[in-house]
Image (cartoon, rainbow, N blue to C red; front, top):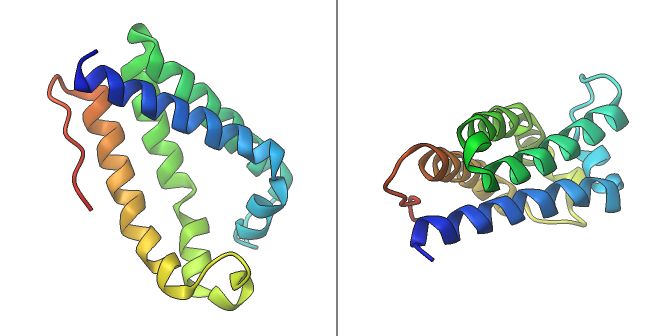
Length: 129
């Protein structure tokens, strides 16, 4: 296996597992949806399904690029939840610290870059954190 194929498999499995986790532990995700958004349960379910489908799509050569674009759009769409945690760490003290929530913000950008590089280019290198 080439480094890119290993990265694709790991990326696909990561998103499939993350998406499944929305249904295994929905309470965590419901807590971090910003209050100004409607129907938190529906949004958590949709994002979980999209992560699973994106993970599967990354594993299929014909759908890889579209899946990558979809996953990037999803990561951008859920970014407000990460901001919510960083802005209100007192609400999430049982799951992490304020510093961890702030560190998570640029890590999300690194994940976006990895998805882009792995699903779009022939050369695959994720930025190091």
